[in-house]
Image (cartoon, rainbow, N blue to C red; front, side, top):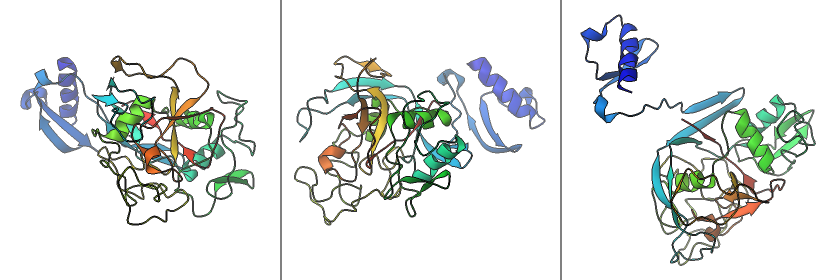
Length: 320
């Protein structure tokens, strides 16, 4: 890696019409349009890798803003003392490599752009895709997408709300289209927690000002100042992000993961991908019509991959 860093510095310095002998070889120059925008001293002995992080993934009519989730180890699942936990939340240690995750749930307008780019008809089938006999999405005339005039379009006023009625197959096809994948269940929980160990990344309570859920039923002994909840999806980013810069990890819509649902292991895991087979895929995060208990960081639910619902969407991850 030392040789790679020196080579990188040489290239950058030559771009400035300098030679390596004219500057310290332990200085990293970051450039844009031929100009230095940042420079930093680097102790080469302390460096084992460099990640070039692109914060926005751009496809025709689809811009996906991402957050870099650092590598780390965390305890997945919930402690036996957590109020209203379920028995399938067995705690175990998980170590993950760094990845990027879309800051927001994929929206109706983003998903419509994908469907139209691929020429998906009203039946939602993608003949050239990996799952030609499985519908990607079903129309929803109140909160989601409808097929009109040979194109998929968002219901007026819901363009930036999370896409719904999308199947696991439809979520996976979109993720592949933009060069990513669905998050593993471990990636999802790690990103949701953002370093926290409490039931929510907001602490021990999830209030009506922090997430879109059924506010009439807060968590445990917590309370809300308002109990009349929205009763539908909200535009992504309506509430404050978590510590990793991710929005709506609690509530709004359930989110598909890439893992088959199954019993957790009890031994430490590294970059786990779940069971090899199964009948249902994991969904995470809770939704606008769930109580706070069902929006906890550790909550696990599961759907058949052909299932679709007005409260299930997804987000995407990318390898740095």
